[in-house]
Image 1 (cartoon, helix red, strand yellow):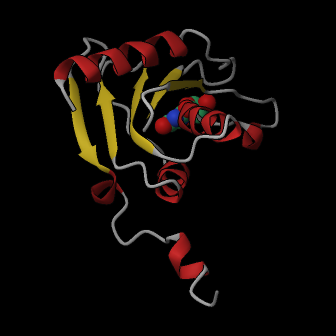
Image 2 (image 1 turned 180 degrees about the horizontal axis):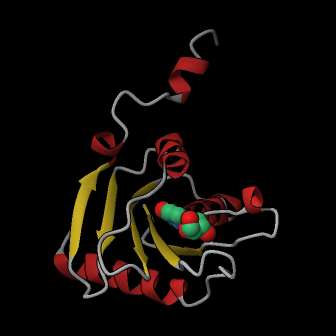
Length: 135
Ligand code: THU
């Protein structure tokens, strides 16, 4: 991805972070997902008094895109209030694997970013092809 495309996605993630509902952790996260057709879906973390009901920013973005009919994606950017890089949790990595999101971008509070291949963040992941082998 070009530097300007990455920066645009990171900017969208920062905007989404502002909408986070995180009264329990006070840790706001924003995500921006680039679909194959160029559209961008954003997400923020949405917490709950029953902590386990919390949904991470990345999954909010992915589920919103899927609910809008998108299934093919190019990249997802993740930012947070933390000054360093924030890496997606294991559950979100698994959801990214389901939809073959090839590239994960993490940006710090200064806007500096790193790009990772999803396969390096979740090596030997459990894929839908394994479940569907019998079909
Ligand atoms: N969180 C995310 O939204 N994405 C991540 O990648 C890591 C964690 C959220 C969940 C919870 O609302 C808060 O950050 C603290 O764990």
